[in-house]
Image (cartoon, rainbow, N blue to C red; front, side, top):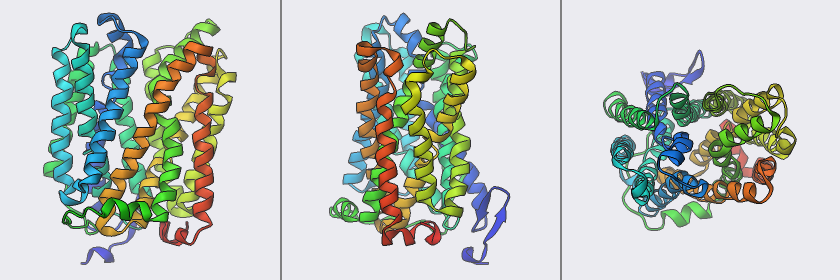
Length: 415
C-alpha cells in the first residue's frame, strides 16, 4: 500500500501513512522531554538569586542567554543550510545530547562563577536551535493533510515540556534536582528520536549547500507574511512565560491573598498552551491557518491589554484569565510553522523554518529584558501592557495573508 493511499481519521489526527501516528507520538514526546532544558534554570531563578546572591537583572540573563544562544545557533544553521544538509533526526539527536551536557554542567557552577553559568545557558540555547526546527521538519515529513493538527500536537508537547521545570520545582525539588531531571529527560528524548522514529513519506532528502537559500526564503512573500505573524506572536510569548510567576506572586502580595503554589500555577498557565495548540491546530485544518492564528492572537492580545486591571485582583479572576492567556498565547505557533512548510520551496523547507524561529527568538530578547525595566519604572501592574502590540500586528499580517493568492496553498486551500 502506498503512503498516499492511507488517509483516514484516527481519533485525534489524520493518519496519512502507515506508522504516522506512532511517529507523531514519538516525535512529540521527544520534543516534550528535550524542551525541559529551556526553563530548567529560569524555573528556579528565585532560589538561585538567594543561593548565588544574584540581582533580578542577573537572574533575567539566565533566560536571555538561552534565547541569544538559540538565535545564534539558528542563524548559523540557516546561513549554512544545516537543517537541509543534515538529516533532521540526526540533527535532533546530536543537538539534544549537546544541550543535555551543557545543562548538566550547571551542577558544577556556583555564584562565584556566574559568567560560566550564563555561557552554559547560551550553549544550551544554541543546542536547542538544532532540536526545535528539526523536530518540526521531521513532523512535516509524516503529515500533509493533517499537518496543522500534527504540528499543533508537537508545539503542545513543546509547551508542556517548557512548563515542566516549574512543576518539578513545585513538587519540592531544589535547583539541583530540576537541572538533573531536565538533563536526564533530554537524554531519553535523544534515544527515542534516534532509535524510535523513521523518516516519513513526505520527508525531503538532504540538499547540497546553497548560499542563495536564505535569499530565496526572504524573497518568498508567503514565508514573509507567515514570519510577520510569528514575530507578533513571539513578541508576547516568552515574556509571558518568563515573568508570569513573578507577576502572579506580586499580584497575590498586593491583594493579600494566596494563589497556592506559584510554581504549580505557573506550570498550568504555560501547559494550558499544549491543549490550545492541539485544538487550534484542528481549527486550522478545518477553517484555515490564518483564521486560527488570527483568533488566537486576538484573544491573547486582549488579555495582555487588560492585564493592568488584573493586577491585585481576586485569584478567582486572575488565575482563570491567565490560564486562558496561556491557552491561547502559544496556540498559533504551530500554524506559522505549517504556513512556512506550505509556502517555502521543498528544498529550502528546513532553512525557512530555522530562519523564522531565529528571527522570532531574536525579538524575544527585547520583551524579556523590557519587562523588568518596566517593573523598575512603573511596577508590575504595567509590566505586560506592551505585550499587546505584537499580537495586534500579527493579526494584521494574517488578514493580509488570507486575502492574498498565497492563501490557496494553506491548509488545502482553506487559507
